[in-house]
Length: 162
Ligand SMILES: [Zn+2]
Image (cartoon, rainbow, N blue to C red; front, side, top):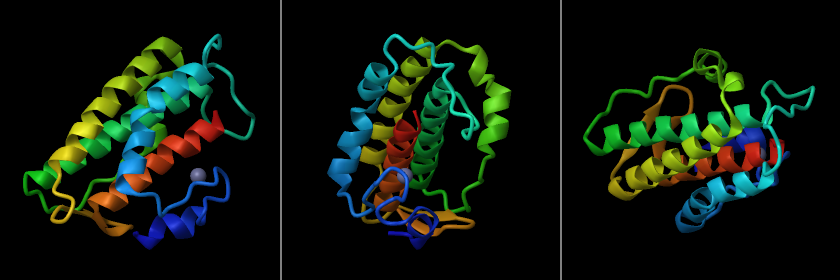
């Protein structure tokens, strides 16, 4: 596992208790089930609920998780096709503003998460677990397992935020 995430969050994560040694299959299953878990979690809520110490509302986190999975799916697909250039990082707060998360309904966020998970699973299946490596400018060389574990953490951590 790339040490960056463990140093940043702790193992297990100091907030959400995520264990970074999760297997590829278990992490994929947890991401696959996340749209339904999020849907149940936010049932009968507007998604506008927000804790004062957090920067986004509940639905903002759902949109973020969906966008993050979609972006990583594109990165995995690019690497599977032979791309070796370093990953271009994105500013998630700028993306949230550009996409106007807060003006969209929670139903659209859950729908988007469903679609993003489908794309993400496809990209992981296509990636050769033993050969594909992504070059992250701050986190170093990332294996497919590193990516799957970190993407799963994003899903679990923000579920905990919500
Ligand atoms: Zn966490």
